[in-house]
Length: 123
Length: 406
Image (tube, rainbow over all chains, first blue to last red; front, side, top):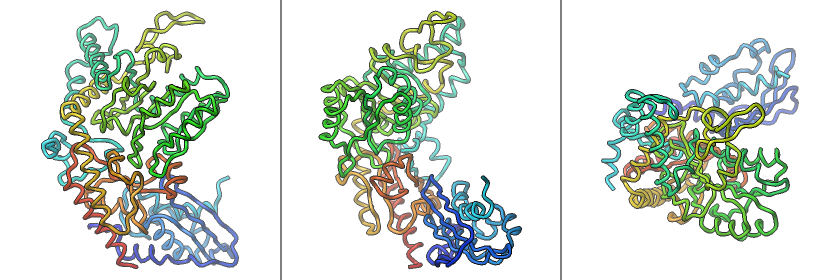
């Protein structure tokens, strides 16, 4: 199980993250920083008919944060807002499919937090 | 130095076979003797200190005061100048709140951008609170204090205190405290030193250094967590208001006014961390037994060897002093293209414990190193050149793992 956390698919997403190209229009956006390590995500979403039409993320940080953002950005496309609202930690762990220690869980969850912040801001 | 033999006196290593512990700047491991001393207190003579007219309390008091004397001797201070706190952070916070009451609005407190948050935030807060001014001394390229700029500040402003770390927890840069203290005296400024990163790595003689305050934590010098020391010059500790108020620090209590006990009790309100203090004294004895000459010599050779080996890795950037003789037992670096968290994770998978992040020095990372995070390997008496070989091997394997995708 050595380095299982950096299995190929994670490194593939890290080196070539999906959905990083500029999108022309967006309806929602957010920026989140993990101040303990400097990881940062800038997220733009285009919502049409209560569904996510387009996603663009600019994620800077460790392999886990970037891979997680890339995987999540694929996953949420064409999904309904209701569905997105229900995505939680367990969904993320299933999607990214790695075992992480509590300290790395933050990196893994940062993209989801950014999505939730953009779509369901708590004032 | 027989570091393998020393390693055997730390049970953490037999309980974690293969562990390469290079996170000593965060906390050091504890020798069996320190652990036994703490256990002995709780199992054989646990009682509260002072004014207990029974055998156990007398014994606890004696051990607690003996611990104070041991620590005083360890740093060439007087026992009544040793104030036990919960750690460096606690010591600096209490110091900031109390010593600032001696200053006048508009006075300047000088610090540097390389300070640990614990030697920055208390001063940032108190300068705002008491209408003092917080100013930053310029740093040279290897993050040493620019002495000309220090003197310039001392000339230009009414500086009441310089708060400075003895050794940087990020770059291992050693501050020339003697020169700082000499300049400070010339302009009648006090010098408060954050010694958290220095206390286990270099001998400290507060009288020779001619400084005014020195703070450190027990857990970074092979002692227990939750215990630390604020040393202060006697006349200043007498002049200052108590660091906190409560039981055990009074002479006479009235409705409106009360009077304070003599040093050191005046500054130690509440039941102290008795077992911690006793354990800390045992840790000091542990270091004294090895001898600082040997500690410094050994750790210096580790730094030298690690620097040399790390330089073999082309993608690696080392921060801090270029000359290893200017660096204490900390090496901080980044590997080009791999995030520090990923490096630390891969090292951890190979049982090499390092730290990744900003190491509680956001200003230093943001303004001086210009990266959000770094990887830090820090050494202690039980580390060996083989530990460093394993670090290098693990680093190479992490680089390989990531570069397969280029």
